[in-house]
Length: 176
Image 1 (spheres, helix red, strand yellow):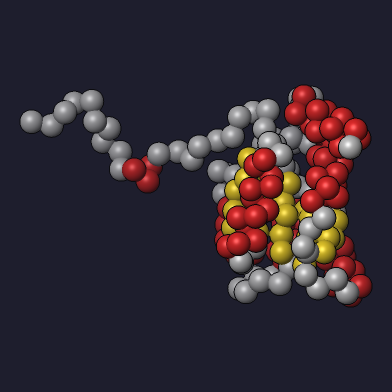
Image 2 (cartoon, helix red, strand yellow):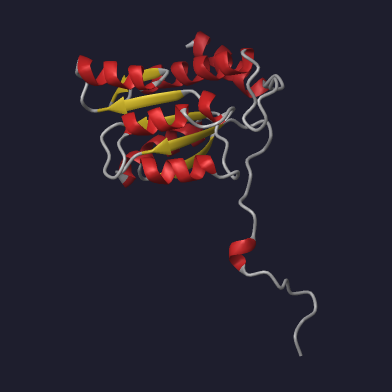
């Protein structure tokens, strides 16, 4: 006899776990697992919820769906299948509020042409890898603060509620 309390839904129908409402989310896109792991660990330690994608195509699929609306994207530029420059261009063509998500493009190649291309594609910031973690923390806080002040909400677009987490992070950065 089958237990009546068992759910008739298969496991894949379980909705994805959503981060707490007061938690900023970051989508990390990099083809190298060790880079995703290290950046993810740093961001989680700083209090962010982290989601990952291995290339631009995978990231676009996540962003086009309704399950993920990150507050910030950090993407590698040099990746197979779809590079970071193309990804940034494609994100900027999506509907709001997704099109306005701040994007940090990063590469181990720090030449001026790559920086120019990343910024021309619509990146908010270009950083060289390996990251200066203190600078990365400051830049993320600045981008999220600007997003909040512009009144952009990850799900709907209306103004975001003030975040104690962001204010605490900014104070900590200013102190040292």
